[in-house]
Length: 275
Ligand SMILES: C[S@@+](CC[C@H](N)C(=O)[O-])C[C@H]1O[C@@H](n2cnc3c(N)ncnc32)[C@H](O)[C@@H]1O
Image (cartoon, rainbow, N blue to C red):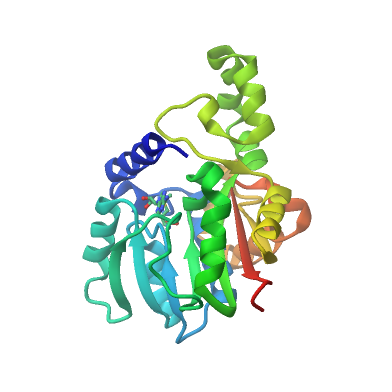
């Protein structure tokens, strides 16, 4: 990843500012995604854990980690996102610090210093060929038996979900660029303000293996709630039925056949070299 790409993404998230908070609230699929990420986190973070949160943004999951009873070191590489997080959670004794951090450089932390590292919402998708070094660094700073919990962008699910726009890409950018994106998941082939690496589930498993880890669990986000959201509007107003729907959705998102079906792919992994 070039320094220019890095600066471009930092500027993107500085500009995005508080819109990031709304991403997981403004429509049904966002609210389901929030629930899927939340439930996944609850499986791997316990009360009393010391957690490093990377790319925390304004703090949707900082809030969740506080509620889980963790102590959190909050970080982001965007000063604006970090400041929004600080403003929201300044009163919480559970947040021990707010610091600028690039997921590619965790060298300032000691081996095994955290019980868990949380990297939700794609920081690992924004570092392209530096992802191996980044993930190895995360495995180094979790204690033996500790976990890295992350989400990255999904290639197949995003392609299906954004099919109308995706089908226009050959027209706009040419067939070569379109084929290259579908082959590699790398959005730099067309450029634009939001460039990222999209993954297949098998590629996430290979990434974790290469970095000396093992995947403990994976999940799509989302499965049945990305398309035809109108049909879910009345369901969401019925608390009992909505609760049941979410339970089914969260469970189905974890099925092997569903993993590539969402816009995001969640994974929890631990290092096998130190466990
Ligand atoms: C889509 S937001 C997700 C925010 C939050 N984790 C969530 O899931 O709601 C991605 C965040 O990752 C941060 N980010 C992107 N690239 C990063 C990098 N290389 N290192 C650290 N943070 C990064 C951005 O500044 C932004 O706040």
